[in-house]
Length: 394
Image (cartoon, helix red, strand yellow):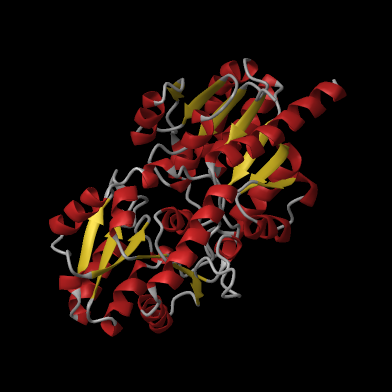
């Protein structure tokens, strides 16, 4: 099946999880594709490096609208009209518009109306008041119900939240994110040793956490757990992306106050994440709110390490933890440093054979269920069905 001609729209150009998903999606797209970004940044460069056609139409007043905002102002609505008019031209050259973020969906919905093209919203967020204002959720769901030809979600947890907020169940299609295994397979033992030497952790037991620094991502939980793990070191990989610098400073202060700052490495945003995760001993996911998907969980499985994750949201669909014969990882209550520390001790106590069996099972499961090829096929099938249905109607 050849994928339909698609215009992909994304509002941010930082390389977060949703953007990395889109990078792999368009990189494997078997059909004409173009990406329209509503801001400029590293994402544009990454797309260009893969020879993906990309244009930038920067946000104006819409960019200042936050998830917690009660409602968009007049300036934001004017900005939507401006951007939609600009995107209508490339939209007419496509069969379908794929909106990768909520702001992108607002603009794409208007552009699709002008260009008379169907719009598919790829929803990466759990729509709850933990992250969005009630009015923001209501507006997004109303727009989806009226203007989206389909809503792709990254987990059953994301789907359930959309339906619970009033979203039409018939719109929803679950397509899990895909993470390539090749970068993890290519890491050598020499690279791992070099990374350990660079952080002076050659003999330490290293716990790695990877993701943007944000309160709900819960890196502070790992820092607190170190109090009960006196011979362990934490590698915190990532940085604050969306005005969350205060939180980044807070966890540095926390580490000093707990007396563990000499065992916490703030490694920042890195391009060598596969090597860092391979060089660690265990990978943890510490979100205190339900995670829509949980990219780092799959990354840890691909790195062939035990993975300990917060028991909520889409993570429950990735890890099997109920039965020892099928175990692929461990789940712990969100926001509970004591239980996280206990899980780390459990992992350390595993025999080599038991550990190897679990990580091999987890790796095989990650490759089978969460590969870019599976993701691209799933998204292409949804978009092709939307285009086919539209053609039959017209």
